Image (tube, rainbow, N blue to C red; front, side, top):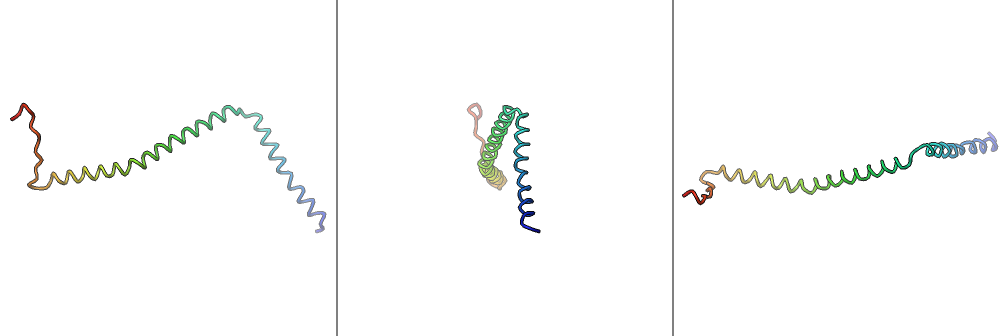
Length: 94
């Protein structure tokens, strides 16, 4: 292999960039950009809503677990013998 062949092969490999740019710009001429912008906006809004629900779930989940534990502890208290929870009497009952 001589030096001239190496330079020719290297130079021929650089034409793919021109081909790719030509193909991309040719395809972009046939695409409705307003549709793409509308779709991108819908995707961003949907992602924000999904993220908000995820964060809300992450915040409320520990609070819900604490509430469930308190309710479970309260129901255990009612099962203890000798511990009665008195019902409040209404004014018409005596």
